[in-house]
Length: 258
Length: 232
Image 1 (cartoon, helix red, strand yellow):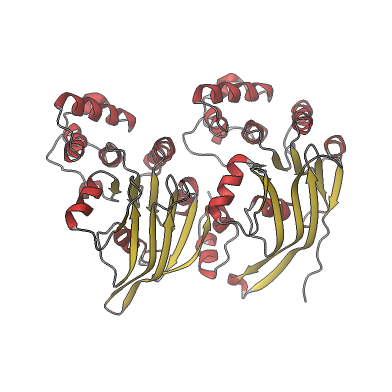
Image 2 (spheres, rainbow over the protein chains, first blue to last red):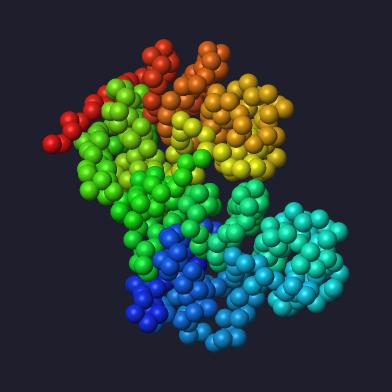
């Protein structure tokens, strides 16, 4: 059945002191679907990503994940080792800063292979071959496999992080501003790469971005957040071309035309 | 009429509320009715600003209908796009409902042929590539351009790539927004022929054609869209 959600959240609320980071947020994600979460800085979108992925606990609300055996897991009450196992294999998390995910003292190939080993692979030759294959897929020359990440540019580091994340064929990937802080030419390359990999591998993605053009390019659906509240959600092109809520209209009209 | 009903619009209304302009309301469409059968082409007619593009975008689900129904025959059943959840609209667009916009939205780094090939439905990559190449060839896009991203192409070339992208999917319902606007006479005739072939295959078409000569050659009927009076 493809009609079952992969991830479902109901009534997520989280306050930092008096500041509402999330207010009764509901979200659903289906297999192979890309959902963008947009809003300005401080709107709660990264907090939502952290709560959906179990990295942060909400004050109230529930997140359900359906595993490949169709079993439902409550992300916030499941045992910590089971959640870590999910993050090692079925899930991926791409950080805005690749250094938060990569091990800078381990070679490029090692960074990719390490996640395979964590997922249970033991055959060194296979791991190395797969790592090289993934470096090539993210357009890093195979002869850089033994180089240290610190010799890589920002765009290459981001692509290396993507290879490290996707090597275990996750079904669900959380992305936090994956193109933030990169030059536009590097951004374009990365976006194209993410777009083609996500479509080809049929990965579901929750994508946090403040860039509406990135959301339009990658996402099927979009959620607009303001001060912890989802003010509007729907089909990406409908929300961006015919925004209903005052805040969405403000966001859309604030984008500079090139 | 014995042909199958493919698209039915009932009492469609659309207005825009501009929150940044003090909640100004612009009523654009009111009580639009339309039925399009397989193999039929309906042209939207009316002066500039009457709401023809708004209607076409509403039919695609790009604009949200405020009232009324937009029923599209999808997988043998009529689906109401005005109320369908976003996921259903994505499925209807993938399989049933095609749309050729006025302007190509270019994706950085993606070549002309890939832009077209990725819109082919259900074909393996090689076959999609071959189909895309032959469509581009038919639309007189030189082979040396196929591998280039179309960002720097002329308006007419971009429009033909957009047309190839719209036609390669073979959707049973097709929406065309000014498909010949920036084309020369030769390419215009090719597009007219493609529209005629699609109709012969049973594709139901709704289009905006400013060129009266094009309109008279492809359209079976006109739907007049009249500008609404400004609310006081």
